[in-house]
Amino acid sequence: MLEKELIISVIEKFFDSGKTKNFAPLREIQLDDPNFSSFSDVPPYELQDYKTTLALEELRFVSISDYNYEIKNPKISIYGDSAVVAFELIQKGMLVDNKAYTGEFITIHNRATFVLIKKPTWKIAHIHLSMIKNN
Image (tube, rainbow, N blue to C red):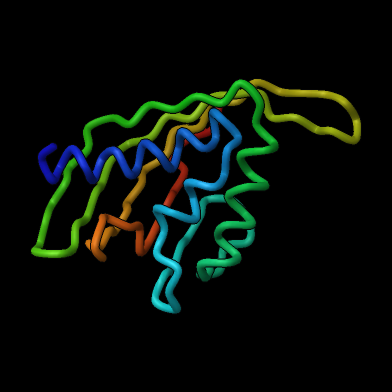
């Protein structure tokens, strides 16, 4: 498999966790290191560390049933053992309120940037998601 294909497969595995609700891969593909960081388009907006990011990702993916995503126009730039991937992201699903037993269909259009390092396999070292629009 080509390096760019390996890199995009790591990002697909990240979002596939939202579809399958199997969160174990999130621990395998993200760098468990003090240098890991993430910014999200949902609160809390502060820079997050590895442990906090995992918890927030799981909460987000659990709260959306029938989750699906589309990665559009990915640009993958490789610099030795590091890579930057920028793309548009369409996320869809049913936002579930388990307390009120209600749901709302959502479509979220994001810009996304992932930074990966090869250690020895490609791992996510930074994530930045910013919402373009929410329908």
